[in-house]
Length: 334
Ligand code: KG4
Ligand code: ZN
Image (tube, rainbow, N blue to C red; front, side, top):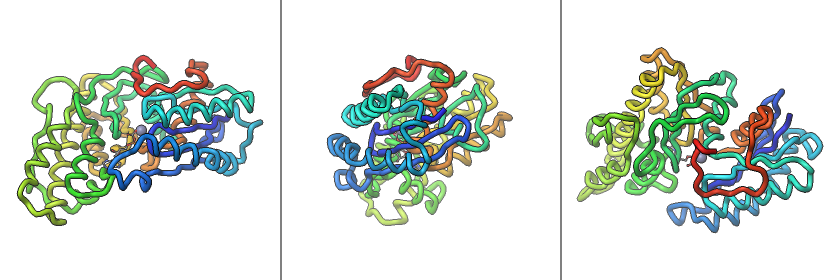
């Protein structure tokens, strides 16, 4: 079975072809970062318009690299939500058109399901069930994954997502958008303990997170100081340590509470090296295995959407059909 996957929920246009027997055959991506950089964040209307420009060439490229065509493709999977509504509508409309022209079904996929399944693209995939830490620009959740389409949220952020906190703090440090990866790079050379920020929600029971106070703590720490590279690095280090501590502590508790022996990291912040190192220790202490996708499949991509579509098709699970676009969409009720 062969599925074309289309991702347009935010600022990446991405297309991939996944084959149930041969695995991932191609994946192509255009990042809009340069387009939005001058504005310090994603401009929804510009994002939608750029998706329109990029989709057709990317589909041609992905089909060509996969050696696939309208005959070999069994279904067109696309991200149906959550995300920017205009951007989602471009992908949904494009997928509906292909589906109609090719006479193949269109499958509307939940973006976060895509992220959760992304580690299954790797050579050593996790088996179900597993505990997943989903950390992206829009979401921070601990998810009990019992199987395909069987997700239970154990904890989530009460305010900012972890990636959002990275990006906002990076902006305070004068780093270009999206600053998450740039902040992480500075943190590598920052000194331990020069800035110590609060560990939000650490003392409280449960598995929820809160990150908005951290950004404020960074703002207060910077007040009256001249921003140079050394300060940037030290603040980045202090901030990253606090986020990683908060995420690691809740993962430790969740492994303890659920008894899961597999921990998966997914989403853009999953690319963070320090987070991966810390979670490797947390997993080892709980006699659990740690799994994560390669960096390019942590951030938004088409491969995870093609894979999710293929798995749903094979399992005979419902997938929304054509022309679905939902800006807000609970994962549990997907
Ligand atoms: O999953 P993703 O590509 O998009 C969403 O669905 O939100 O995640 C993007 C987020 C951004 O906030 C970005 O700054 C963050 O992931 N990010 C990182 C790193 N690389 C990307 N955050 C911390 N460390 C990194 N190395
Ligand atoms: Zn995402």
